[in-house]
Image (cartoon, rainbow, N blue to C red; front, side, top):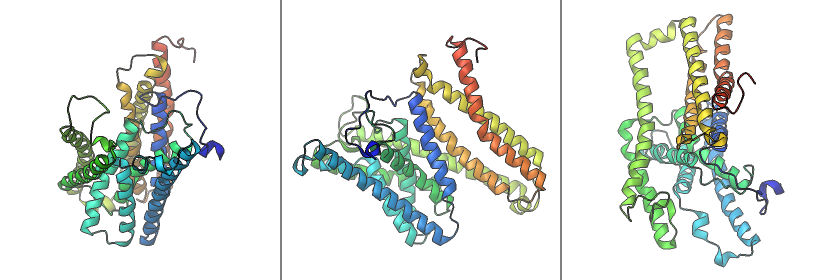
Length: 382
């Protein structure tokens, strides 16, 4: 427990989390956590969904309050007291902190109100366009991960789980069909960012802290002064949100087009040809393996000394890949409900398993080939 909560449990050497193999491992951890939550939290009854939402809200509440308490106890441990503790900064009015409390409120309301409630639909779009994007950006540029504490320290675990849940909760609301992503509701995302900006800017002006870059975009120097940097921040974050909205809209379009072409009733009544589905699963397996291998190669560029020219940022695609694989797996799971002969079921299950199992080994093969080509390994030495 002292290892997990210790105030003086510092590393002998700081860890670099940016665009390297450590960053890649972080992305894999986050993706695995989101996948685990997606498959484990599968209650189908309304009572089960209600309990799940309240549990998620409770976990986020405990993590956020725990973070504040820990920061205060650390401050006291280092000789401070309540009078010189930066309450504003440690309570935090950053984008993700605001979205964490918004997510808690949304989950509680969603547990008791009807899903058609217009206010809830407003909140759902804000979570999808703002909270999910905030969590996404956190792992794209992981400056919130402490580089002088172990990864399994409370400070880092709290950060990783909280921001992972900001990504997961909107996905869970889509899974439970409480929320449908529609491009026509994209305007609500701007409402969300105005809400975040208003809270962050007000807190910044009162406290003197720079919450959510509301006073100054000190992440990068664009040569733009306050307040003209604010529209830039909104455009960038909204553009990322638009990509997510567009992806879902495209998926709906493809799905609806297929239904119109073949007929929904026909799809439910007729068997799909096993060899056709087997081919699709095989292609997905190959593409997954190549993509996984490519990401490993890119993300280890800094580690092995090859020039990365910033391409390490593509390791973030690992998170997108894992989420897409979730959707794929869920689709196949539903497909398996169609009655097949037992031997066909086994064959399709095997293909699904291979999709995941073969991704990592083939990625390692690509990495070894990369090391060989650059002279780090002798050919045929592995």
